[in-house]
Image (tube, rainbow, N blue to C red; front, top):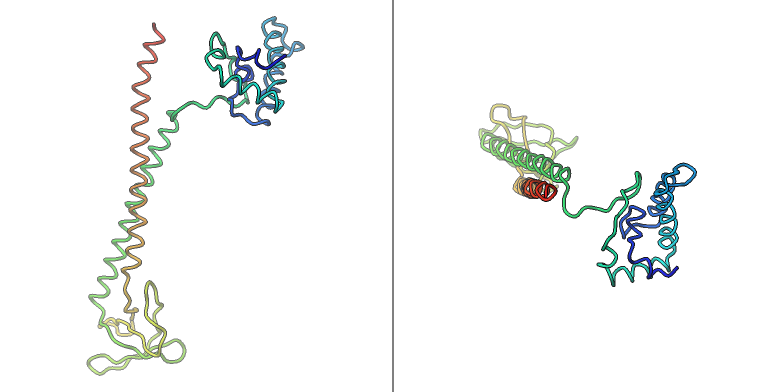
Length: 246
């Protein structure tokens, strides 16, 4: 039978799948539906009629050439295909037609996930500020001095009052200093052997601040999208109920 004769019936609806479905999902939907409607298990005359329609539809859509011809005819006369069409319910396990827009569940997930991401950004911002404040406090309390690198990864330095100390060279983080014979450090006047690298942490702080800002902005965007979709669904529900009542 020519595929043009079938435009009055939506063959995809007969199989309970979307028009973009792939070959594997099409076959899976056919097997599930055929098992439900097969005359050996379902003696209902209407089920037998639907079974023959199902076999006929699968015969067209499972063949690449006839499926292309049907899709071409369906695209030319979409209104004819829809008029009077009674789509069958989606078979369990088949791929249903994807709804347009966001579902209620997806909107809630976006809202909750966005809130968590925004909170993560706030936490990252707080951590960045805490690290910055800690470094500023150390730089305010510790005194800068130039130390000389010696063996065993140690350094030695002289304080302004003439005392000489030897201690282990601190690990360099952030921008750090060079690896020459000397290194800029800061020592604790109360305990001169407690030293830190005299480095600049601005680069680290800026990087962390950018990451925190991205988290906060991204989270807020998802919260707004989820909230707007939930409001839209809430407005659609009364309208759909009123339409159904009429």
